[in-house]
Image 1: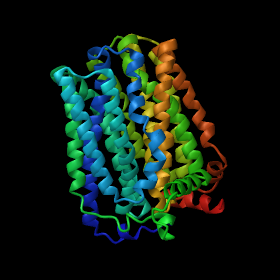
Image 2: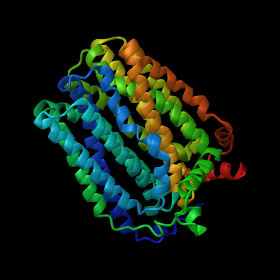
Image 3: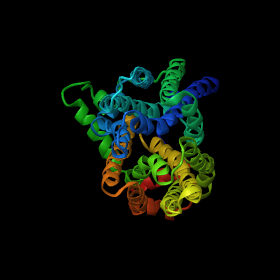
Amino acid sequence: MFPRSPAEHMPLRTTDRDFGLLWAGQSLSLFGDQFMTLALPLLAVTVLGASPAQAALLPFALFLPFLPLGLPAGAIVDRLPRRTVMLVCDGVQVLAFGAIWVLAALGGLTFPLLFALILVSGCAVVFFQVAYTSYLPSLYGEAEALHRGNTRLALSESVAKALGPMAAGPVITALGLVGAIAANMVSFAASLASVALIRHREEGATTPGSAAASGTGREPGWMRRDIAEGLRFALRHPILRPVLACGTVYVLFLSMVETSLVLYCRNILGLSPGWIGVVIGAAAAGYPIGNLLSTRLIRRLGSPRTLVLAASVSVLGIVAMPALGSLGGAPGAIGLVAGSIVHCVGEGAFGPTSITMRQVLTPAALLGRVGSVQRFLLWGAIALGSLLAAGATALGGLTAAVWIGALGTVLCLPALLQRGIRAAMTSAPASGVQQDATRESNNSQ
């Protein structure tokens, strides 16, 4: 076990209050983000005159910063108060989307400006995500409580994915695309306020890791050493390595599907913005089911078996999406919803399980760096997948991009079934998140 003494000695009421604030702020921010799922590609195509291939580059701009900044962000966040990092990042998001809103309202927005501001937003996302997932274990030191927290946060993301696009359609109809951008800016302002109200402060947040422990502080080369330490731990770990490999392959190809889906519904299926929101939102209804099932599956099957089952279900649903969508029209839309619900059930169970395993198996001083390895790989894969989607759309059309992405996700299963996961699956199922993963980790070291 990895002790997190500050969290273990915090009063329960204070911990729950602070988590509630973090949860509320993230829920509002995630809900606002879903407006952008519809608003950004439609804004680029209908207002700025961009092509579908250019519109597919906007997710690339959002996630591109994870490639150069993902690993350094972990080293930096491990040396700073994580709550402060979250505050700064939320402030940058308010400014970035505020600028998009003002420029769009005044008619001064161009596609290069939109791309640049989304790039700035992506830089803030890098640091916020690393700080955010590293901060939660300081609130909850016990594995079961930590998993409950991760499940609730994942549930908020799931509900936002389900209801956000549905709400975005009527909002866009009533207020226009500019109004949807303003709503996202307000959601980041709400997240900023909620994080500012959190009372908990981490102990020793500015001096974690081996560099600080050895007294080297910030001597030349500290960032390289800190990044290397996080990489070695994550990529040599018998449980974390296959989980990271699976997630990277899966996200690379899934992002091709998701990047193309809005315009696929519009151009291929001929759906209106309102119905596109219904299709995407209803499809995400599977996420809460998977989130709520994850704890029960872990107790029954153990964490490694839960991950394999969840990944298999998710891949099955993704491959079914273009197959059923090829029916066209209303049947195709219904088929997309059905396949995506199945996929989202699997992903909803995989997400909180893998995050909790990473947090439990990682020493507190390495949380930021190991988290940044995961974010670098997974969110960097989103950037590359969006770029692949743009290329596939330009060369073969939207249907080809969706099919390539769907079939490519199958490759995540052999990436997951490496020796560490296979060995853990053959052992007796544990009663919780921590025991089965820790047992296999200790046996392999």
